[in-house]
Length: 383
Image 1 (cartoon, rainbow, N blue to C red):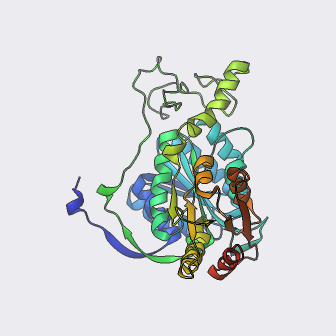
Image 2: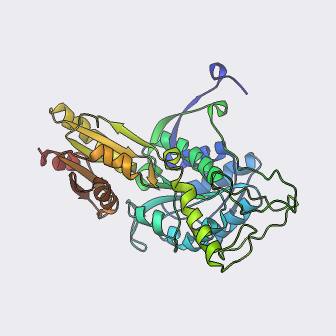
Image 3: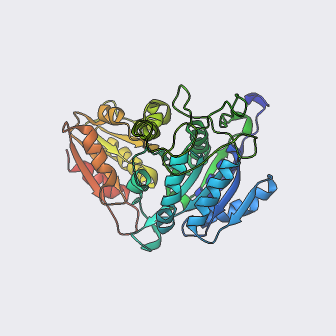
């Protein structure tokens, strides 16, 4: 591989949805199944052009349910696979997403959020799928969801989504929004040699000795691909280490708990957040995704007025890091939480704050972005 000194970086004007595709391909995505839906359609459109050029496969399915099923099948056959959707399509994917969680199938699901519920306003920005990204499937499990705040970060987060999916053998959600999906910015794409790419572990024991769902020391099993010569049973029924269904209470307890512990035991490895001016802040603004862009401007303007305000921006939305958030907001005058919903993440922030500060939600569900002025007004009301 080329050394960083000889690496070739490209500066291009790119849309957020395009950046997600390019990042996914750089991470090794070679299969995409999807169904067109605003405002994510550009992802499917570009994937249909780009994947054949790199030896991959694109297929437009009959609906979002089939799209998710196809992605699970492709991943079980050894391919890095992705699908993309929005709003109602994300709801339709939940059953097969839950299946992928239970069967520990690595894949990436992109949700470019739009105004809802139901059909809502298909072209309008929103952040109403935050809780669905965590609790959309039934039962107990942990989720990983990443939320970019720029076009360049959308590229990087797409790479990281695949790395985490492969590392922890599970679906990872890339939770974008219409603002980021349709935004165009100048982006510096890294040379492939600069990227860290993670590939799933493959069995080292011979067929007959390997158990597909036996967890390693990190709680993550090594599951062979279909066609590698191993006997593998994949079922959504709760199963033991051999993959076959079990109703034994001890087996069920261990299986369900591990779906959460394999994530939460590695919280610091998975979690990513940006802090800007938080150390001396009297007020912290907690913002994510497209809304964080307006929040950053509001914080800058507040600082210019002599107000001690900082920005805490999670890139990892789930799992939520209670201790990191608590350390950032505890004891401040207030924490302002702007979001394009009716307070989904504000409740998590309030829980992490544990009564040590006043949490002020700034909510908008009009199908329009929050402005820096609206966020600044909420900040100034605290002082």
